[in-house]
Image 1 (cartoon, rainbow, N blue to C red):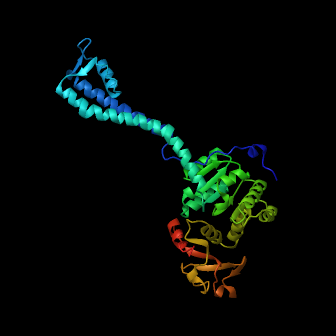
Image 2: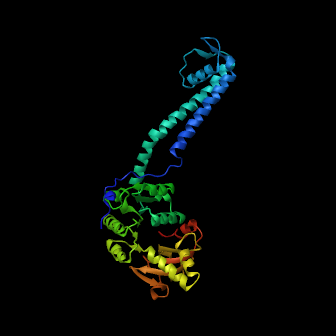
Image 3: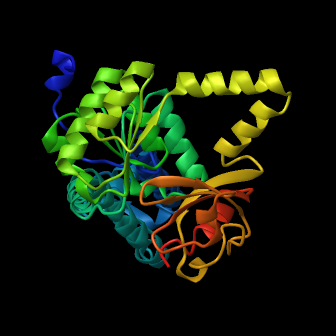
Length: 357
């Protein structure tokens, strides 16, 4: 299994996150504000032109007012035109001077924003990259990857704790707009995965669009992060075993899931709807997987603190249903799969609140 030559040679770009205001809008606002302030000062000087004197010809024209305004704001001061009346000097001191300072700050701020701030942002993103921990890494932002990220955010995951790697800058622009950290990179390269601290990730979601690429990525991730949970999307049934052998903890086959929905709809009008309801955070119920809480140890699966209905437990990697004897008493390190009513990401976060207890 090999990625294409172009992907293999893809250069990694620094981690980045979307800014709230586009560059062109920021520049436009700054320049527009400065121009408005200068225009206001010109009008004030024109209104109070009788308090000005032109030492060259004795007449203050509108062009002279524009000239005097510009040299006043830029603090050049050639002395050929000067305020002579008390009112003109008061205007210079109380109106023009604050405007002069404000315009100066606007231009200095613009220089800061496009020179100093960009350097600062680069340093800040490097710091974020270095301190990544307990984050979600999404490798591939196609249809499946983008839907997964949208669902995670809907369930209450902070977008800033999601890192997306993809080789397509257009797809990454969508992830960046959602608030995620993004990196244009080949997800099968060791150095790129090390850069996003793959070994410290909470979970890794792999959806490269091709089974061979996805399985190669799983192999690379498992090599670098032996204990990190990995979920991968494969589309061919005979690749599911290969994905598990490569190290994936969860293998999702969208074609098979679609078949389940179709088969369910053939047996009842509402089965497919209920399955979709279970899978989405926007539904009325949620399937939740979590560790057993310390206060639940010894209780039966039917008496969960969250008020949900326990469906299954995983004990030492073996699944037991709610009807089996093992479900009569929960033990430490059990993993619970429950179904619970949930109408929003906040509700889901509330249910999972005691997960680390």
